[in-house]
Figure (spheres, each protein chain N blue to C red):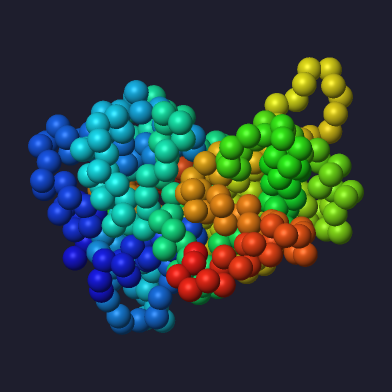
Length: 180
Length: 220
């Protein structure tokens, strides 16, 4: 693949997040190829060095993007990680598909709000995260998967996440190792 | 082969020519212009102030389909013109049609109309002239629910932002073009202006001149 084609793949990913491609074919320079578990295709994920990531904005004292409902969005992602990370000793991607009800129960155990309010927040959060490639979910689908973006978390970040995941309540409301 | 921890094959050829300190400066500037929602003042980063390092930064951006865009004494990044043209040629749109329609309405009210009246100078697509929610909801043929959903998407993408409310005005929400509009290159800003003229006044002499120029071989 030449430089112009590589630049185009990076531009597509910049505009619309990780790109799904058919099996086979070359991988553009600087991108990770993440095969789907069923072999139906793969995702191309741009990988930036830590020194060029969005986290650098903090170090430079520059403002970052203002997320809509950042707390609820983070809680929705946390509930999905809790339900889709089948084996927290292993890698996060591709994880497993979790039924909507299971994610909803995990989310409610985290936020502890009235069901109707929680459901609205969950639906809005899942839509936001699916639009940006953090989750794989088609509108109305009965199950949710983690999106390819989670594969960009490095070993140190995963290690922190693993610790946090252990203390998060699951669908039943119990914390692993601490039965309710 | 790209891994999360190894050298990045796309940046390494450019960075290999720099000292360790200059590599850090260039990478910080790359992060700043690519991720910051607003243009970054050049006083803040050496790789934006220094012409040689800025060339290395532009080389890095070039490899991922991007380029530096100057805004006064600040800098941001945007798509290279030929990359944007190639994506558009392939029918590649990252926004649904309804979102694009609402964005165009905000650009008409906040930029095109003030510019035609002479109250907005230059070729920028950002503006301090608010578009009232009523202009989006009542003066268009779009459904109000669709407009509200589209505004949510556009705000999340930084293409539209809420205008600061004047104290005690009691007005409904108002919108401004978002900071992402700074990322348009000179050619992209001109193309947007021309497309609006072609759509709004197709039989005007200006529109005829635009069509004639585009029909000439080798014209953009």
